[in-house]
Length: 427
Ligand code: CMC
Image 1 (cartoon, protein in one colour):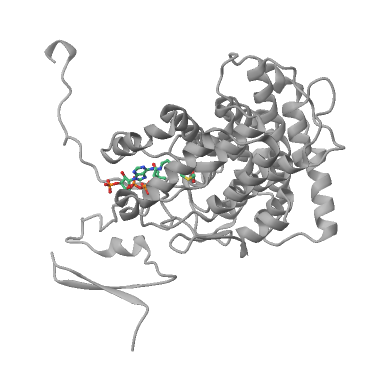
Image 2 (cartoon, helix red, strand yellow):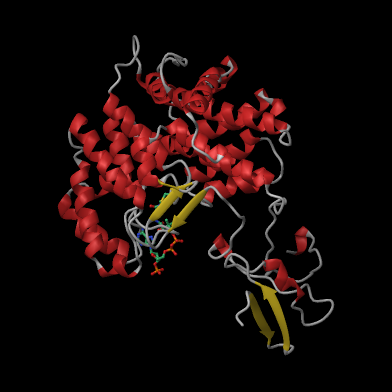
């Protein structure tokens, strides 16, 4: 009869071992019993970049990368993008269920209540250089929030964790907007609690001489983009939040680690890199040469490829639709033509087909953000605002997971054996 176990023969010793298979995985620690002698440490797996290692059990986000499926708590991303608000999605990710009307009203009011930041935060944001990258400001300011809320260290109290999650969701847009205003030399605009979550953020970024005139189509487009970015299971930044959070540091510090990870051009910074790439290409006629350079290993086609998706990223499909709505309002982004042509050529090219490289979420998002009036270096900040509910839900799940301990990978040591210290005049 078939058994849910794996039998391993160690050809060094001829010994057989049987290890259980659960949820399509074996426990790496079960390999430790495989030894050549009693003083042998035991077998480990070598998995740089966690290509084939599940680091947790999670009930938050499901991805099927081959079939292009993404679900938050079981709900397809397409339905959430079409029908839910961002705060509804944030509630769903954090609490596990969609809120009732009453729960959503309370949740919305609670978030509103916490949108203000201590005015000292404006002082140190002012200390950044005029050309400071807004992601750098964001990660610094979010990390610094831990000094304003020392109670956040009490991570073992569920009510306290809830309060800090609310604070991060509520104050994230305020800090992000302040970073935007600082880059432009504009005075900070404080939260306006008569506005909804998205409206308030847009007002804090764009208002000049009175409340910003809302464009509902653009605001809904921004809201959809935030929903599409809200979680993506164990990506680089979420893994950073989990790893740093596993030391039981406060959530502001853990989330700032996530923001730092997202900053990189292979992760959230890709939307910025796409625009820089489109600028570099400049004209449609330069695309074939650019593609040849990429294929020769000189640079990457930014906004293409994904560790998990080996078919069209479902978020990229939805974003294309959002782009249509936005460009109808703002007029076409002239770089769209280059992007569309780049996509067409790449999707027909053997190099990209063979490697299953398709447009990812970042390929079109930057074009939309640019049309909305956000500067290139601000795109990743918008990604961070979107990802906040996911980071927080994953942080909470990690803390409640009895299997988790402080994250501490092993290494295969390949350096020198012991050698005697050489005094400086003998080197
Ligand atoms: N352009 C050209 N070649 C690529 C690209 C690309 N964008 N992505 C992967 N490849 C090639 C790569 O050179 C390698 O080829 P070979 O087998 O000949 O060595 C093969 O495809 C596999 O690449 P990999 O680097 O092993 O794949 P990975 O899973 O480690 O990388 C990735 C995933 C997203 C980092 C990568 O596809 C990439 O660098 N893409 C561009 C940056 C980007 O758009 N990032 C945003 C990701 S989606 C948003 C997010 O979640 O942050």
